[in-house]
Length: 323
View 1 (cartoon, helix red, strand yellow):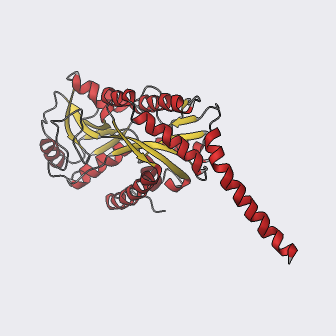
View 2: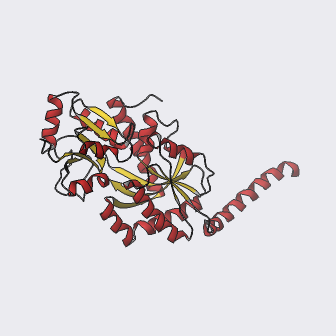
View 3: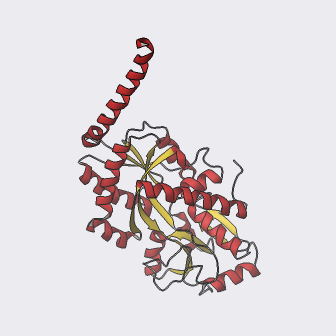
């Protein structure tokens, strides 16, 4: 009996040691070691700028460097794949978004959001439909009526195949029962091509549109989200114009699956302090994002709900690749 009891006793001791080590791990982490933040967008992009504001605040809160590494490619697939393969110890984190679901359901990523553990939501951004200021359309209704009257003639630029802006544009057009040509671009190229009159419209997140709208180069027709974009309080949402499209873009931090909960809690606390700081709030106004902290457990539920919703809508639109 003693021989059969030893393995059980050993297992109990191991569990007890792990439980005791968890708080100690949280206190020691990160122990001055760098925490690498993977960003799936090019340096200087709005998403990259926001991530660097977050990284600076986290570094102060954690007492350790938080270097940002830009890993672009595949609409985010390169970044997600890299981080999913790292050791789950908290030293490799990813600046994630709804794109984890759109990438997976469009067939770009072989794995879904469950490959990561959520840490915290950081911000919300609004997909905006914009045209050149000299375009003939003054409202979303006028634009949609033209699209329907001229099927396949309007080109709408987005941030890449499978991106959130691609999905938002497709959802709007499908809801309106129209037909356009979707044109995927790399970081920052959609706006450039619209200004160069190579396309007729774009769907981009607010930070990419704000400076050009302020300069008078672009006209914003609608916010494809659940509420009006604070930077454009007079621009109605698509829902207000009669089109059932509300696709907010959230951004946050996630870590490889299996990262110790104590480490996740430490990271979450650093994010909360950063997001609630005056510096980050001011950055939101300047860059064009809405600070919106959400803790790990709630963030995980949000990701799961959005994944299910996106899968259903992408199936209806014919954008979902069968898994």
